Amino acid sequence: MLIVMKAHATEDEVKRVCQKIEGFGFRAHSIPGAQRTAIGITGNETELDPGTFDEMSGVQEVIRVSKPYKLVSRDVKEEDTIVRFPNSEATIGGEEVAVMAGPCAIESREQAFATAEHVARAGARFFRGGAYKPRTSPYSFQGLAIDGLKILADIRERFGLMIVTEAVDNESLELVEQYADMIQIGARNMQNFSLLKRAGRARKPVLLKRGMSATVEEFLMAAEYIMSEGNYNVVLCERGVRTFADHTRNTLDLSVVPAVQRLSHLPIIVDPSHGTGKRDKVHPMALAAVAAGASGLIVEVHPNPDRALSDGYQSMFPDQFRELADEARAIGELLRSRRSGAQLAPALV
Ligand code: PEP
Ligand code: MN
Image (tube, rainbow, N blue to C red; front, side):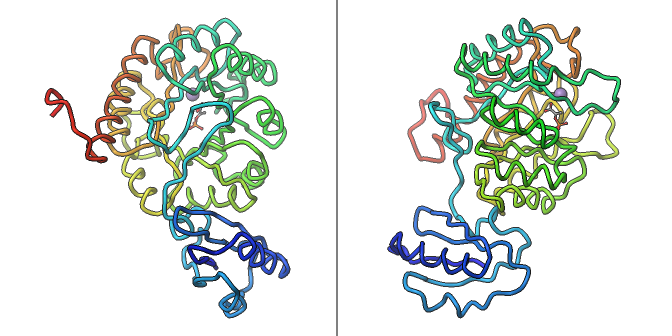
């Protein structure tokens, strides 16, 4: 159930409604929007009587939400969510195309710093790199763990890049939350519900990757798990799904971008590296993702891909990445300026 407050409802009125919900033993999620505040109710396996709230002061209407996801839905919040980072200009879901880049895994201080220098020079605001790697084989490189997190924190210090890195279980999430700016939940963990709940109790934004065979509804329900615990800073990420096509590692499903945007206010970005698995396909698919309306990109870059300990064949050379970042920004700006009705330079028309 969703309680929509009147446009001019006071903070006190919102608070009284939340208190009433909590008095029943449920959880109230007050989500302010541009026009009005909506209050989502979770934790109610049994039905609540709408009449209980109808008559309260400041309440505009009480809506039964028929979709299984509530807090991620546009019913709760009509306008797009913009995720912000303290002490940084970086945003996801705002005006700018958010660009995240870095190696698949943090392999050494030298490798990570060399990559970060290129990433920062290309104008990206986020650095990615796994300290904990979910590998198909237990014999493959598993990541540097805490030592990798320390290198990442030093990279933030040196280059001012926001750090995005994966937590593979509740234990690593504890550490990732301390060291990183954004917690990545990988495709293989999209339905690890205890990890999702733990991420929902974290105080950092979460980057949630789509499971390899997840439907849009399953993807949104995974985000709902995080939000239902009180963390509203969730960014979705399309990274390709399993199909019969074998010319790429996965099939990058760009149509999920508008599909998600229709249903949810959460930003969605695209990972063309895991989405294609092949370096030469990363650039065109990244541009297509921005053209399709994605709020950002996450791309693997390595100073020496042939020697990478994981995912070298899909990692871009630094020069390739720089070109990609420039073109992606140009497409993002072109779309934004056309949509805001701004005058275009004649050469661009
Ligand atoms: C990654 O981003 O390094 C990764 C392992 O991605 P995914 O979970 O999408 O496979
Ligand atoms: Mn990878």
